[in-house]
Amino acid sequence: MSMNPSTPSSPPDEGVVPGPAVPEPTGPRRRHVWLYAGVAAAGAAAGVGWAWWRTGATDEHAQAGQALWERSFETPAGAVQPMAAFKGKPLLLNFWATWCPPCIAELPLLDGFYREHAAKGWQVVGIAIDQPSAVRTFLERTPVGFPVVMAGLGGTDLSRSLGNLGGGLPFTVLFGADGSIFHRKIGQITPENLRQWASLG
Image 1: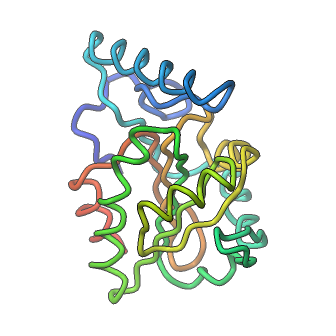
Image 2: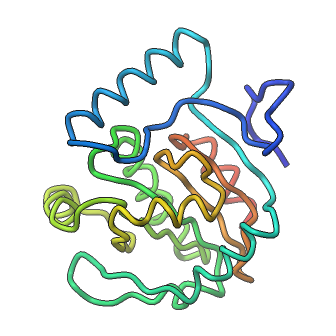
């Protein structure tokens, strides 16, 4: 199942359509912004879309998806949130960071999706790959209605295990009610993405 109208005719072996996403953290926050601007300009010059798509999952990624339900993360309020609490209903899991411009840009869309579809069974969880203090400060200023948990910078490894081979952000994984992965996207989501995903749940 491919929902990306701009998918190249010859995707790489991994089944992921290449496109710029914000690189994983490697230095000070100013460097993150510089890197983002650089890849954005390069992508625009090459005519490359923002989305990297991957439908289905390898056995390794499927196993990592099942292992996710055994994990627990700290919330911004300091509580412990077991991921098993979200199993049993469709889940949109979004990896983001406060230093990632496309992550911040898509938060209102995710929040709107959550508010509109929560009564229909959809869940949304944001996993912050960031310093806890930065996440808390950001959410105090820009709160969202859906749950947010903090994986720290080590969350990059978790996102890779779920199919985000380059470790870029934002990265979104959709889980079915049975806990299995049924769709992934690397790059900023669009309203059309959310409309299509809502019909899958």
